[in-house]
Image (cartoon, rainbow, N blue to C red; front, side, top):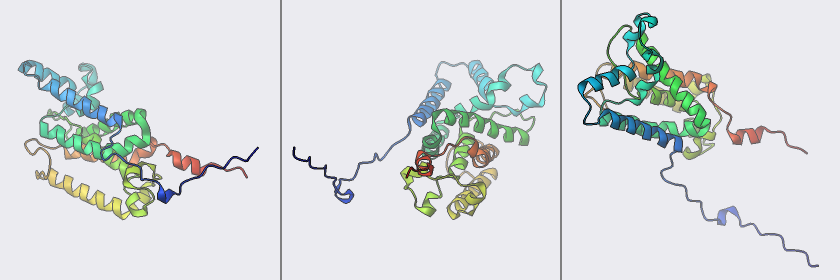
Length: 256
């Protein structure tokens, strides 16, 4: 019997390049955007009365004044409003701006930590943003709505692994979720991360003084909630992170 000819492997440089979609957003991010759009559409149904709208905002917006009084004397809104406020938006500009940044910064985080951890991260980053807002505006009766705090949390989380790719060039931008997680100290030694944080702080400082560069300038912006979310994502991302599969494979002992 003749020996079978071994399969021929075409050199990598001769293989046609794989086509990478120009717009590739994880399904959980698309689901998040869809949920925000559906909630916004419900908010703006034309047949709502003023009383119904007031009930909707009172029941699902975050109000710092709720926590300045004994919770036993209130309803149960204080339980869910630290999260549900992040699903409400006040205008098309508001939801469009948050949706854009959600696609940019949530995509690498979602690819890295998976659906379940992404949902948990959303819940806790929303609560952290609301907590700092409540501390600064203790007893205030204004309403806090919008996903900006969560988006800021995702920005802070991305600083721990996504931006260093620009320094090390270990993976391309589309594979940034495969980068090893940096410690807080190592992140602050990255020129890319530091430059981004400085620009982010400068932008929120302008907002604090009433200067809105992008987004909806017709409504006050809760810059403090942004800071709460960012600090949560940057400082506590390791609690939600999981080691990238490529790192696990490379660290596994090989048999000789």
